[in-house]
Image 1 (cartoon, one colour):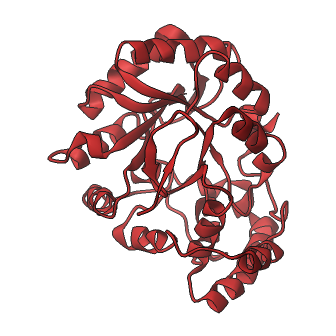
Image 2 (tube, rainbow, N blue to C red; image 1 turned 180 degrees about the vertical axis):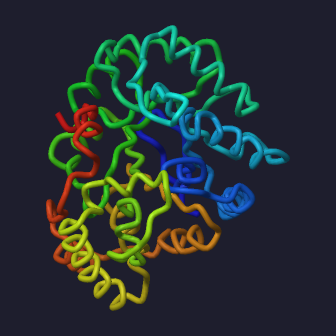
Length: 331
């Protein structure tokens, strides 16, 4: 497994990270035994960046990771945790909380659920519009001083917020959606991150399965799968997006790899400061994703990929209107 450093001040991590959200939330039922086996397979393959959130399954995802790491050397894992998203008993969403007192409260519960004495990278899941980012980052900096956190990350924030946060404390990385179907960061956010020495951990590299090469317009979705109301998976939007995938399939087949591998490889090829997060929930899907590590994409392949799926070619927003409004990165 190749490695990359997250920004100028962050840890050295595997060139691909594993996102754990789907093992506990938002993509329908998952099997805990298979999820744990997948985490083990990732660690054995050299994947050390494991991304979770305290609100994924209302703590269940952190408990799952704790179980998966039982018997493993804690120092072999770089645990990235998102916090601040508020839930209700029915699984609904109730806003963000970035107040310093809340930051420390969230961290205390996460440390207990994970069964560890430190969080490697700690980040607010979304910007709290009621709390200056300087206050939230300052609270995490105090957790670093106390030894509970190693690095600060951010998620889905815009260029101005990046600058304000970095003025308070070095930021290791920005976690944000980046894929062939979501290239909005290229205009301003990515250049600003590079100017400030902030790495990118890219989630949604397969656009929630659209770029897996296995999606179909008649696929039935389980209850609780947010793709059931995601704009890119609806009606004519879906038909349009699947045509883009078929164009990408032709490029993949010519190269002798899968659609998913090309999509992941394209993100990884955008810079050594970018680490794609793959959301594999099974060992089979993980093995396919790992096949994108190190195969390389020469310029001719990059041009063919971007001709198949040009920038801004996707139909439909990446979230519903309410969720898009909550993204500082989209303002």
